[in-house]
Image (tube, rainbow, N blue to C red):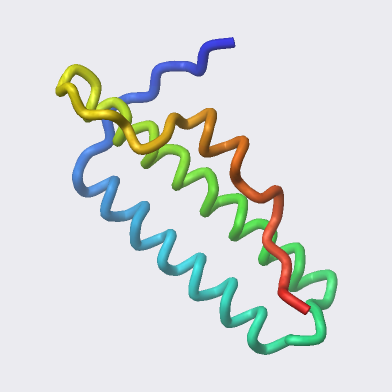
Length: 95
């Protein structure tokens, strides 16, 4: 099934997604550092939500990168489908 065509992202939208990604990563790392023995269910759910949003942003940015290199003779780094299949289903703390 073909993915729906998404509109071109503006530079401002790309920057916003990059800043969101940074924020999500910082929150995930901080949550894991506060609870090295494991996260309580509420915090774990929040971390999983941040991880899901992070993955969504990364997929959109990868799709944008693929579109921007189409027709330039450059090889895209990875297709959105490859990135999705390689992504971890959730982010959990290391034990």
